[in-house]
Image (tube, rainbow, N blue to C red):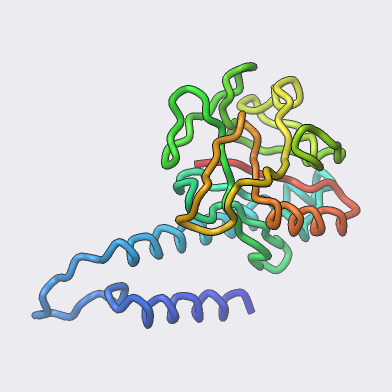
Length: 211
């Protein structure tokens, strides 16, 4: 079924953006429009996230993590695009996608996040995280994040939390887009959706951030 959905997704893209079909010999070469470029970029990002989720299944099983839910954030995409994915590794299904804010530190821009694991850097950190206990903080409910790699093992010390922020938009190419202090931060409606998915799980859930 995931393969059929993938074919349907590509077919729909070709219908919506004829330039994706390429050209035949003798036809003039037409440069893709900005909408077509964005579609291709997002398609590659989703496919990569699905591949990462699938490749991590042996590790998830070996370490007692859920294989029915994983969160993956591809911060190569600009902050105004949906780049935070809830995926079911067992079935290779994309369950949800959302806008995610990254940290504002070290000159990070909307289309270019700077990674850092340093305390006080206000940067997002790359790597694998275990989603820990829920907590209530300045912005409401959140989840403590435990960094599992050398690139993010200061997450608890840095108070990096998976949480929502009320003013943040949930729509692509909309405002306001607001940097975090290094936390993976979603709009309220998207966080609530992900929160409901987490609460259904009996095993620890993994989050991966990369670019």
